[in-house]
Image (cartoon, rainbow, N blue to C red; front, side):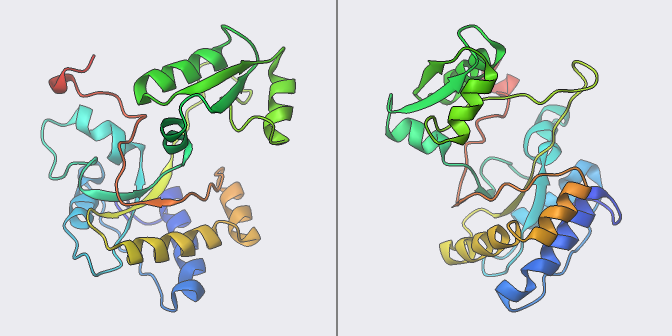
Length: 228
């Protein structure tokens, strides 16, 4: 845990660690290693022995922000960890033109957001415009269209900010370890008691498949790598 005890991230990690005990057959110990904007804890996990069950609760700061804020980091967030990610990109690339997404209409912010996503990830997903967000969302919920971008109303325009949390381990973590941990955490994230606790913290559980690497497509390109 790259943060001190008592914060929201720490409380979530402890709740999930305790709930994973039955699935793993042994306890998970939450080891708080705060400091240096999460880099101390991240460096420890990046260099952990691969046969250990050493994983970290990773967030926006560690995986996306820090490389743009610090000139040097003791790890490479894109290469030194194993991740869990969604399957949307894989499907969009594996079946170009066969995966659809809905939007409230041509030129809507939702449409443009997905087109930006597509241009940065090179995933070919076909646009299906609707006459408004409600009918588009209804078809997504009904399974007629697999996905869409959709905002939630905020009290102050421009003030809504979201943070993600995910488990990462050192790069090269054995596939068996990754799958076992992924299965355990996904089982926990469906537990009504854990889901309720997360809702109390203002969080939403999103179980996802495991991957041994990730391109982190939502990360901004580095300026020193020709990014803009």
